[in-house]
Image (tube, rainbow, N blue to C red; front, side):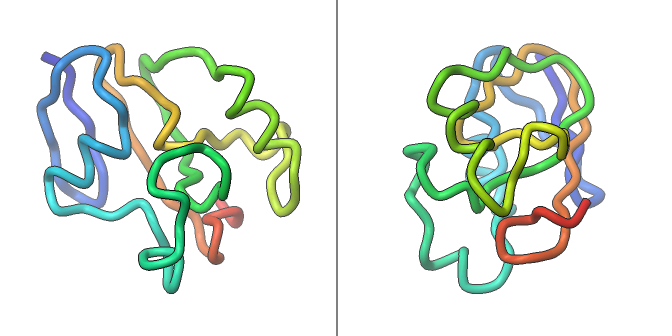
Length: 104
């Protein structure tokens, strides 16, 4: 089983699980500030669940790529949307500052 490391916690999950769901089920949030209440609930449209991920995860899909082209994100920022990212092996996750976590 893959292990997700985030905020000092290590969570085991099924391979192919959505990163946002894994963290949420463990009681951890990928949101900063008011984004905790005001987000798209995993549809990939708001971009507030952006995190930096190191490890084995799925390739970005069309929806995720499109959202990461919109400000305040940019593909060069090296972030992923937790709601669109599938865990395929051990990963380390970091959340940046800012409402969208854009300041890594």
